[in-house]
Image (tube, rainbow over all chains, first blue to last red; front, side, top):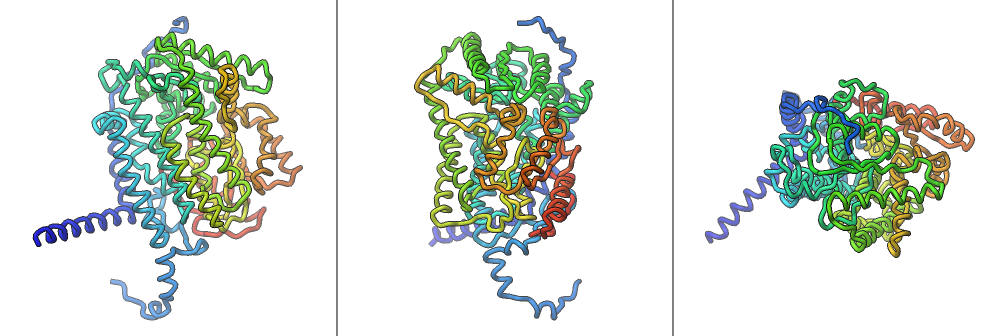
Length: 64
Length: 542
C-alpha cells in the first residue's frame, strides 16, 4: 500500500514537472529568459573581460 | 475585466475549433506572423501544430535536444570544461545557448514527416558542433594558463575551408579542428548578433568595410583574442578565394605557430593543375608527419573515405527523391546546412546515425506517397552563397508564398565519391574534392561551373531561381550581368537576393522578405498563402 502511495506521489510530481516544462516550451519561456536575461548578462561579462592585445605581437614574416 | 461577448461565443464553430486543436490549422489559416513578438522574433507562444505534431515537437525535438545537448557535453568533456569555455569565449556563450530557437526558425510550419526528418538534420549539426568546441576546450592552452597538455599536442588546427578529409590518415591519434567553423560559421546561423563583434573588431584596426565579411569576421576573432590556443601547428588554404589568404596572414601573425599553406587552383579544369593540387596534398601529409612524428596511415585513410563515400551515396538517393518526386521530406534549410556541414567537416558517426533515421522517413514518404509540402507553387533552386544570418528564409518563403526550395548550390558542390583502390588515384580524387569546395566550384571556380545552374534546374525540375547576391563578393559581383542576360534569354523567373553573408546590417532580413514579396506580387501576380508573414519586424532577433 505504501509503495502505491509513493508511486502515486512520484507520478503526480512527474506530471507536474512535465506540465511545467510544456508551459516553458509553449510560451517560449526558455527563449525569453535567454534573450532578456542570460545573453545581456553574458555580453556584459565578455565586454569587460581583459584580453591580450594581439596587435602588440610583432609579425615576423621571415619565421619558418 | 472584459465582458464576454455571448453573440461571438454563439457563432463559434466548435467543430472547427476541435479539428484545429487536434490536427492544427490548415496552411492558409495559420497566421504564423502573429506568433512573433515585435522586433525580438521571440514567440508569444510557440506554434500549435495539432496534438500529434505539437507533442512530437515538445517531446522529440525540444526536450530531446535539450537532454541530448547535456548528454553530448558530458560525453565530450564534461560540464566543468564546458563552463570554462562558456566563461572565456563570447562565441560560445552568446551563440549556442539559444540553439533551440534556431530549430524553431528553421522548422516553422512543418508537419508530419518533414518535421521529423528536418529536425534530425539539426540534431546532427548540434552534436558535431558540441563535439568540436569540446575538442577545442580539451586542448586549449588559454583555459590552462598557457600550459599545453597532451590533447594540445594531438590536435591539428586548420582553416574551416580546408576539407577535414585530408587529415583522415591520422584520425586515430589526432583531432582535426577547423578554426573558424564553430566560432564563426555556425554562430551566424544560430545567433547573428555574435559575429558583428568580430567584423567591427577587424575594421577597428584599419581594415576597410568592403572585403568579404566572412574573412573579416574570421580575422576579427583573432583581433579580439577570442580563439582557443589548441594546436601546435596549422594548415591554411586559399579556399574560397584570396580573401582567405588575407585572413591567413592575420592568423599567422596572431597564432605564431608553424603553418602549412595549401593553395587550391581557382580554375581547376586543367589536368596539369590537377596534378599540382594532388602534390599539394602529398606535401601537406609530409608536413604533418614532420610536425607530429606520426606516419601516414593508408589503411585509415581508406577506411574513413569509404565511410564518407557511404554518406555521399545516400545524398545521391536524397537528391533523386527530391528531383523526381513530390515526396522529399526535408526542407530547404535543413538540406542546405546539413549537407555543407557534413561534406566540409568530414566523417563523424552522427552523420551515419542521422542518415539511417532519415532514410527510414524518406522511404516511408515514397512508399506511402506522402507529400510534405503540398502547397508548393514553385520548385526553387537557390544558387550562389546564402545569407548566413537568414538561412531559414526558405522556411519563411514556403510558409508565406509556397516557394519550396528543393536544392541549393552548396549541396551540389562535393558531388563525388573518392576511389580507395590505389593511393595515386585516391589523391587525385581528393584533390578534385578539395577543389569543389563551397564558394569555389560554382562560385569563383569558373564560368562553366557557375552556369551548371541550368542543368541542375532541369535535373531537379525547378521553375524558379533564388539568386543570392553576396554584395561583398567581388568574384560573384562580376557575373551579375551575365546571369541577368541568361535569365532573360531563357525566360527564367529569378529573384535576386542581396546580402552580406554574415552581416545582417547591410541588407536586413525584412529587406530580403520585401524583395521576395515585391517579385511575387508584381511579377508573378500571386497572393500570399499566409499574409501575416509579409511584413514583420525581427530586426533584433537571433
